[in-house]
Length: 229
Image (cartoon, rainbow, N blue to C red; front, side, top):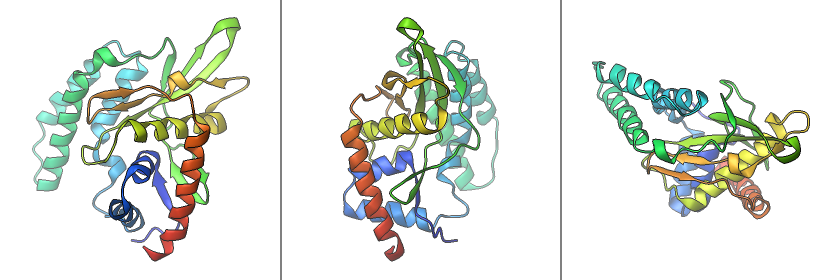
């Protein structure tokens, strides 16, 4: 199966930007010719769902995390690939259990992100943002704020503070264009990146203009390279 239209996830785009040429081409190749038996977005499905439920309920009761671990540990899949995927989900949930004290919803009201969110287009590239948790709050003079949390799971990605900054910037633009309603203003503090793989919570970035210029330029490169991948 070939993906004719350039498309990439926000997390993978951030990894692309901070990677060297060979890794960049591998990222684009995997996006253009996806393995039908392996969906990156679905690999950590169970962990993503359980963590999102925990966060959407106010990050108070870790019961969804504990229950999901118990369910996964009782499974007996027959395929090696499925066994690895299940074990990876268990490991992700166990790592997240060690991060509970680091989670700060900034006093905002959380809700689950959409199951079928819109994609944003950056320089002719379709970017899948898929915020995991939407945050809404009220500031001084009853100013209404909105933002979103983004989870990151992959232990093989070249993900760091720089990459997380790009993800936060993309999420902020996405919130402004697709999530904010009425007079809501995007709050950068809400747009954190929770890196479950490395057990780090990256704060939302306040400087987004230059980051978005970098992102737009890289998406132009992706669009130009796509036919030759």
